[in-house]
Length: 120
Image (cartoon, rainbow, N blue to C red; front, side, top):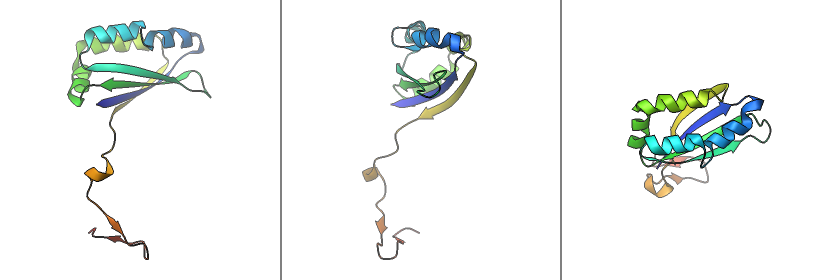
């Protein structure tokens, strides 16, 4: 699974319309569900200290699904819709969880010296 993260700044008068549109069941949610295969869901978070700032985390079935969305002509329509509700947008791109420790090469730490042993 891949996550994509966007930060939005919304005019105070647009807070409720923006949140309503992007939340589960909202217009943006409906549009992306109908036009973008591989999109799973969006979590919308609102800042507790500055309520005009939102973070949207999209969940994608794969990196390929996210990249297809980036090339999809429907994306321009979805982005224009969100632009009308926001003053600024920052697209932070794709994220995934780091590999689990057991998926990495083991490293031994020499506790007496703090040196890494077995690492060139």
